[in-house]
Length: 140
Length: 97
Length: 334
Image (cartoon, each protein chain N blue to C red):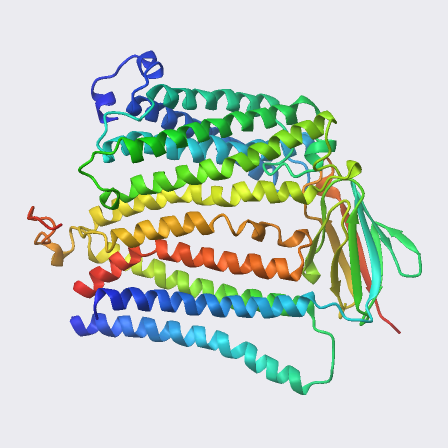
């Protein structure tokens, strides 16, 4: 095996691994990017240093969010002052809240319980305490 | 000793290939399973965590091969290794360029 | 440096010198001092986070200030000056010239760093090292954030000046008998990062100016209340600081290229593919800044394009690993 062969095998193996990693992640990202049509819209507004949630029927909640199990939800996330990030670690949802922009995220809760909501972009004095609680209740 | 080195190289390569191809096959099998079930929403967190663990496995396999090579190399070509008693032809002061 | 220990000189002779080894010594000593200062802040952060709830730091604003100054110190006052220090010492020797091309400019570039460092440390700002707008524009308190902006401005100018110096030293003062293709790879890494710095830093310098005028209220580039776009700041910032990651790492790779062949007693597998990898990394490094911004609400197309660029980047980074081919070369030839 000559030197050139070694180099080309090396480059080939790396291109192969990278192509597989790229295609796999691209495919999952495409799946996750696709919001179901029947999703209920929740407007999420971040400001220093609390969260406001507005349901589709107009009811508002501050610092807590009550959702139903099995129902798809789409979050429309924005901010009133500085950058924040809407994060629910148990549901792998993280999306920046940027003033002047509406970002989206979605999920279908499949488990009943209480889950933390937190801010994941540094936003000043009480950033560390900018939390909320997600309550998922049975649909029956 | 030449054969043992070749054999160990071979086993490293085989192990790497098996792990990486398993990573390729597992999602395909999952996909086939998903196709037989009734129409449902995807579970975002499952998809993302599965992807995460596949990528992490790939990264750790590549990392193990790379750092294993370096460690073996440092051990094998250290000056005090018995096989390195004689200076290499690059160290004898002859013109090598 | 061994000479220094054998025959010590008074410190002012080193401080007022413009010789490249003396400036290199100053760079190295001060960057190591900043490494320890930043390290103290890091230990403070870890001690505070040892258990939940407040431990040793009085309030959250102090904590925010500490992690900001820690990040700024490690990146701008340790990583960049350290590379400059080693480069100052070795590059003129590697290209066989008596000194850097502009010795006085070299000393000026160094002495701007303590000024910038003083502004950053005395201000003790809380904007975090990324200083994302609009927090840094509309909410960050007092003169601290402005001092941070001016400090970084000065450090940025300093690194552009020393980069110009490196480029001229390597391209114009190199010994005529030494072709670029035979130049040691550490000198190549310094040439690459110097060119990258000259291209990358002005974007951030512009962003800093815009941020300053925004803070003064005369413009609204990043202030949504005045029609600005906070995401624009992130694009400008990462267009500088994604390449900056390679500016940090390439000198270390260059050192590996010099050290590993010497200590493994084998020549480098291929000088030209090392040069190729540096240049590819430098070029593609400017295309993949967007992967720092995936959570800011990018569209799927933007994400796809940025992922592709990042994969190219990883490929180029693996080409760097061709020093592994030096290793496989050893394996194959015994």
